[in-house]
Length: 153
Image (cartoon, helix red, strand yellow):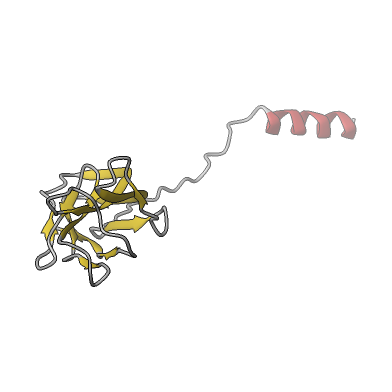
């Protein structure tokens, strides 16, 4: 009989009211901020310029990458161009397609504002165009150097 009583007690406990489980809650808040950034890089390396079919200029192409998470500008410093001493006058040019072009050996060139978030890749074009009456480039070694700078606004 004790077994029947024990079994009845277990059944009664099993079907009795369920215990209330204790619960907790937690507030979760996250915040942060991203500093404004702007990056420009020459992804194509040194540019090799070749004589054009018209023999009036040296030209070459490279590549750039530009990223910004807000309004920004891109500038090219004044061009530092060199030519053989006996060369006739010439016009140097460096262009970052869809951003900025500079043809000045005395002043930088600054793009218009690149609005908002931007991620671009493009062509860098460099040229040395001869300015003589014959329209032919003088023989010799030429070079152009400039610095591209990106500024977050």
